[in-house]
Length: 250
Ligand code: IPE
Ligand code: IPE
Ligand code: MG
Image 1 (tube, protein in one colour):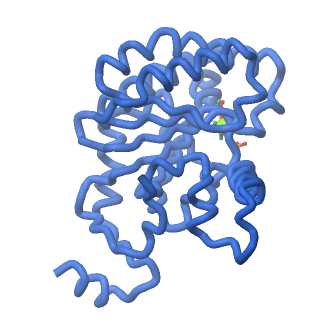
Image 2 (cartoon, rainbow, N blue to C red; image 1 turned 90 degrees about the vertical axis):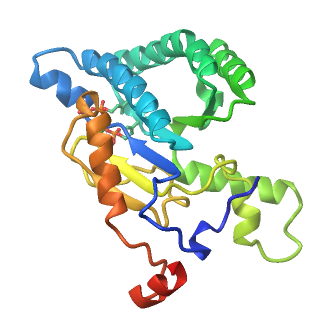
């Protein structure tokens, strides 16, 4: 199904967001504050993911998208990168069956070609296994970059020979790596930084943004509720006036 052009209609923010996208930041600082190695923060971060997935299911959220590793994170020290990869592999091994049992569909998006073949294979199998699940779609963005996503979509449009006329938003959106999901309603970044860091650039055009100082390993169901409450207190206008939006909703 194509969910593009979500900004053309005005969804009510009083409802639960359908799609929440999160930059899970602050693992390193969480650990450093406790005189632990940074990796301890990443390990705790995986536990936090488990908690938030569960919380999203309880709240009937349909799409949860998590930024796990950016295309820029290769710049980190080699031992931290390889540890993050190992954690990713272990988490896949441990969690996929449980996710499947809970009717969760798992998607991994990003430039996967840079990962070991065995990891690529594990990703492929996890996606295959859970493809028909309907309760919640969890997308993990790995070696993902918003600019990469727009460029790979553009290259596909070109390769498909669709360039006879002008490129439309619809043509490009159909090739974005998350074309299966509506654009995020709510974006959350933990860890105190107030930037997008090359996350979903195209898709965040009209998303409501929420930033919190809480480090990712401490982010729990209550923190999620605070973000959702903030979202629900806002008015999404998509360029219209407040009076227009109120008219549309009555
Ligand atoms: C986010 O936490 C996890 C990844 C980027 C993989 P960080 O590792 O960026 O934690 P800080 O920002 O250094 O505290
Ligand atoms: C963004 O976090 C990427 C992920 C959470 C995976 P970073 O901590 O790498 O972001 P910057 O580089 O500080 O902006
Ligand atoms: Mg960080």
